[in-house]
Image 1 (tube, helix red, strand yellow):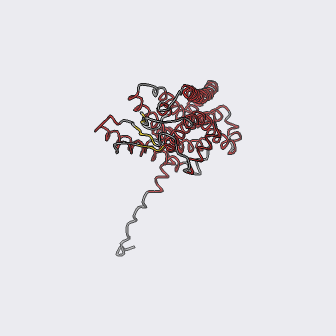
Image 2: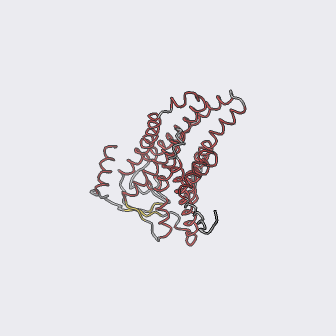
Image 3: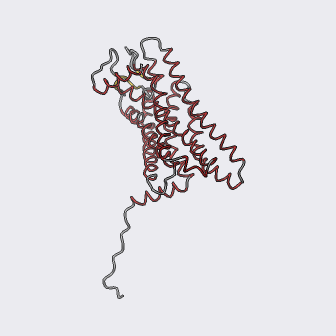
Length: 328
């Protein structure tokens, strides 16, 4: 299956492969909203601009040499994932609000599907890596720099991306190898795997099991690892004094908030069709939207770096001209 996927992928890139049936998909999205679409367009556009601006500011701020902690290195990568993750779907949705029929090519649909799912899993993997980083910082503070070396950080980031790929490929490969002979209307805001699966000409029960198993494995694996890290952190905090407890909690507060929002919002996705689309959009955009605010509000060093970054773009103040007639 993997070799077949690679062959089709190379055919997509070279433009030498054509599907037997459907050649494009129609993204239905929220077409039934009528004139209200413009309201959702403005809200989504403003949200997307905020996501791009906020996460880009985090990335620029973290280039500051003063922020050389491993925690900031992982936050830098998380912000990058959030930007790419939202860019895979939101521009397509925005275009759909402005046209009567929002279409996407057959290869484009599966590229969008793959990157959306892969980046969603990678984002949670990044949160898992950050939880481990907090565990080392609090439970082994004296060995923190010795453990979280640059090679280890790169290995953890590579593992996060690889885990996202491994959890995504089986289900997407199966969907790609199926036959689609019509209809070609995707009842979702983008090429959602479960919505596209309904358009397959044939039995998709195995596909559904593989997709659900992959999603469950990704959620449980990252969730259990994050929970384990924080249980160990909690045990360590109980042995500290009051001042140390407050400091330790402060270092984890932002990450805990993001984890709670990410995993709790995921539980609301699997509900009825029309509400599901709206909730799916909110779910896909909520964490990338809130991440910059949460981390900048909870981290003094990051706030100061953002202020310094903004200061570099501020026009230089015009110095007053010295009056030549002034007596010295």
